[in-house]
Length: 347
Image: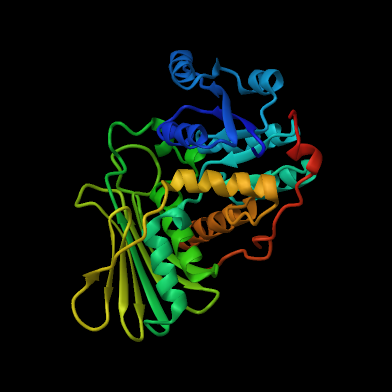
């Protein structure tokens, strides 16, 4: 049997259960603690998953000494929590967006390197079965050259159930672009195997509460020269979450968690997609493989920073009214050198 890593989850928010299930389903990980400011919430989940409950993550880390922490907190707490945990020798899976801005991403990445720990960011798009199938078709050349991408994501962002910090720019970093658009940016970068190089953005701020943007149209270009239009809207209306890739010999339409469609000149027809494990389970496997075997970590901190660099450029573009170049120099996807002493931490 392989290694078994102790894991603690910091923040029992909206998506905590999918992380907990991914941990439970792996023979290589065991949940030791759950932290949440709401003590009853931490205790209920800890009882369900056989872990200890805490309300203070520092106390938890010092007591339990977990190998890995999953940070699932409001965005403005990402930097301080990730850096402190890295300094204690914990490997970190940080929910997206990685931080409030690129500068914070740099500081988190530097802390991970300095302390020899692995840092992963929860960019999930490469783990969806329909995305994998689409990339295989793109890479095969079956549809010719990729000439443009249209991506749209619409959904009610200002619903009453959304925690208030999401609508406070100082705490969230922004609205639909940083929180929803970052998924699309991740998807486009992964599908094309390139980075976004420049962006022109027009945003709106008509939300009934908060000070964050409620919509955005982003006109982008990848480093490979492919034009991209990203449309994100959080006002009331019909929901959508789809990506259309247009080629010289046809087109693909991806509807996330639904289907993959292809056209070679006529109407779109559904394509059979091979089943895969839940994306969070796939993500967890990739992280554990990187720790145990030193395999590539495609969702590294540097990759997470590349997504925030696009978001930040979009915000600059809206303010200035001009196209902005994306900061690419410090956003390579090179892997971290993980100290073996930290990999073996507290075995």
